[in-house]
Structure formats: C-alpha cells, structure tokens
Image 1: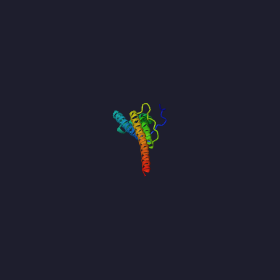
Image 2: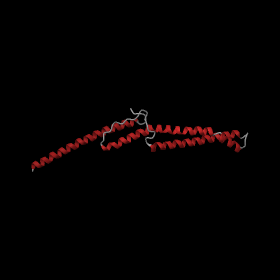
Image 3: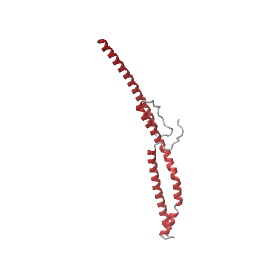
Image 4: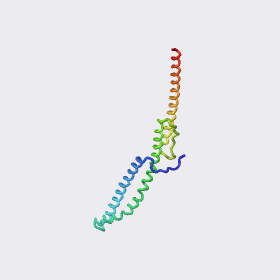
Length: 161
C-alpha cells in the first residue's frame, strides 16, 4: 500500500532521543567490555610481566575490539532509526490527520505500512473520524432546519402585523 520509506527520520526529536540512548548504551557496553577484557588479560600476564607492562600490553590488545565496536555503532544507530520509523511514522501520520480534523477538510482513512506498530490506532481513528463526520453532517442539517424555522417564524410575524 505504501512505498518503502525514503526518510530515515520521520520525527527527529523522538528518534534522536532514542538514538542518543542507544549510543550511550553502546559506549557503556564498550567501556565495560574493554575494561573486563583488559583486567582478565592483565591478570593472566602478571606472572610473566610487571603490572604496568601487563596493563600496557592488555590495553594495546584491545584495538581490535575497539575497531569492531566503532564499526558496529553506525549500524546500531541506523537500525534503531529504521525501527523507530515503525512507530514514529504512524504517529506522524496520525498527528497530521488530527490537525486536519477541526478544519473540516476531508480526511482519507488512515492506514499504516505493513509492520508498523499501532495499526489498531488507525482503525480507532478511522472510526472516530466517521463518527465526527456524521455529527458534523447532522449539525449542518440542524442548522439548516433552524434557519428555515426562523425564516418561517419571521414570515408569520410579518403576516400577523
């Protein structure tokens, strides 16, 4: 029904908040991983080297882990942004439809892409807009009836004089 998403960021404020959190978790994980690995290597080298030499050797051995982690970070963030599109996109479309509601502009039935979260929200919103439109139509009919009744009442008042 919908083409593949062309934008990575639909709601940058929300998506970058989540992206920053993923990066924070990644950095904390990387620090823990390197620290534990260095500690284990340092302990295993203490019988062969001095403490400072063992720490230096263990630290220099972490470069491959750091490179792998650095290469993985952009993939983690990009995948997170794509995942957040599955809820940011529907909320963006819902917000746009809600903004049209008071203006009286016709609103197409809301639908989300396959795999998006909150597809039931689209159904609920569509039911709400149908009810809203029925109430709006009935209100317009009643306004026409009121104007007609006023006109007839004014005609009777004029005829009575």
